[in-house]
Length: 110
Image (cartoon, rainbow, N blue to C red; front, side, top):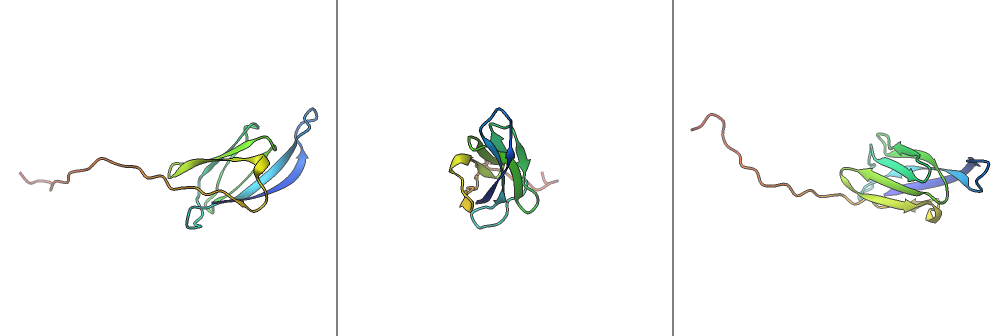
């Protein structure tokens, strides 16, 4: 899950009528264990961040951006910023990889 808090911070560009928001939160898995080293990308501004060892991230986004969360152990998740509210949760589902079978032989036996 991902807990997001947003705060209006500053006007991003003088010619834009959109404000930048500071999004910060913690990325969790299904069991509320923090997920470290997850990439968080804001499509639109090009901003990005990576969660730290406690699963915490923060970055500046606009209301028209999309936040995407990428981690090799979880399915990719996208959140639309305009729909985000403080306290909103995003569930990251664990990804399962099917590996081919393996044969184990004792070393040195003929």
